[in-house]
Length: 408
Image (cartoon, rainbow, N blue to C red; front, side, top):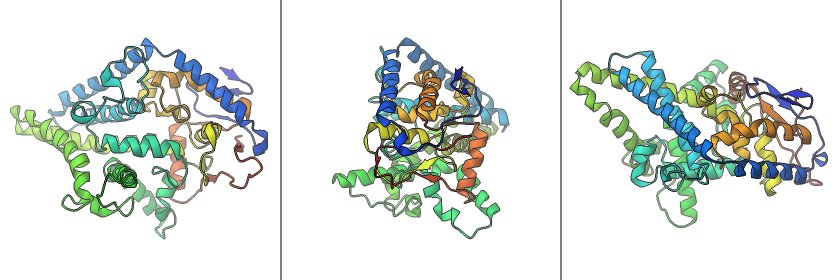
């Protein structure tokens, strides 16, 4: 479709809309009104198609898992690794992510297992989503802090801030890239579980409900020892459930075939672990990093300011088509997801061209590029080659306005 002077398609590789504007020139109230109107239109359209699409994506994940394990016992092989890895990624990025965000709570006739009040709660964690990350901790770390503190120092997932120690280190650049790579293939294990647990415990302690010692930093190594606090809770709630299910209980029946079959399943599952970490890192982390995206030094002021920050602090990838969107975990609609965190995957696809048009009309930067372009921009930030933009904190005459970046 043609939007003003820009071409925007569902399969666009590079789309940039917006221009240099003075903060006073952006009518934030009008922008908020337009986005609220689109939100209401999308929510009124939610229906059986959203549930049908969710079930389709769930079936794809089940099929990948069955095919992965169904071939994994033969020998260590890349086909099984890719199938298992993609299934793990889809279960997290698409199913767990959007359900826990309450994206399907208001879909008519939605089965309770697809609602945020039931999914992965209590014993259902074992059948819904047994990942490295404790669901309760992730709800607080991701749904609350990351989404509503986006780009601030209080955002636990701000990559530039988290890797300032690497950006400012004296390590040669090639070693910095090596550090990033090693982190990328292990980040769901060494970063997300302790970071999510730390933010949950901080919130609980503020309410006087938890006295477990807090990690001193994101990478407090005490958390990786199971016999001292805070490591005890992390192992009980994150590491042990995952290892017990995926590396003990599921591979065990393959011993009935042979020891070689058992070894092959374990080997393929371990390689899938590495690959799914890398896949998730490549898709998730670049969403909010790059020299053309913004960080923020002040707190959000109103819904309109919230909308603006989500747009200029996020980027989309190539969008459209179930296969493409599945491989991106529907995180290629990151702008739409951050503006409205509680919508279905199908609603984000419908919203994408309309969102881009609204941004063009209001002069707000809307960035959509290939995932490989965004990965390069992320790496440049992480190793210190480039620095993200900081939203001007001195626009006192227009405190609820933001300036759109020039996007040639």
